Length: 81
Image (cartoon, rainbow, N blue to C red; front, side, top):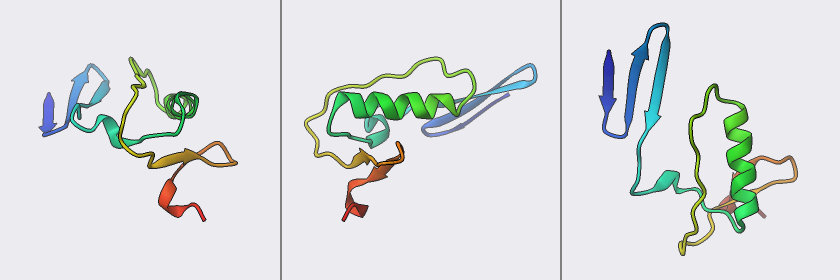
């Protein structure tokens, strides 16, 4: 079974559903000040998901819109006082 909704596809393999999010135009749209912050976010997110196959961090010229807070979680820059 394959379910597709523009950017998301769900494929069943036996008893496992594989969810693929494909948004190359925005690349998830989270932009951090440093590569280290972005990698920390990716590691945290991947630790909460099962069987993450791939991740990537790429450099961007777009303005920063997220930061890692004191609790190690990502938060929008707009919410930072």
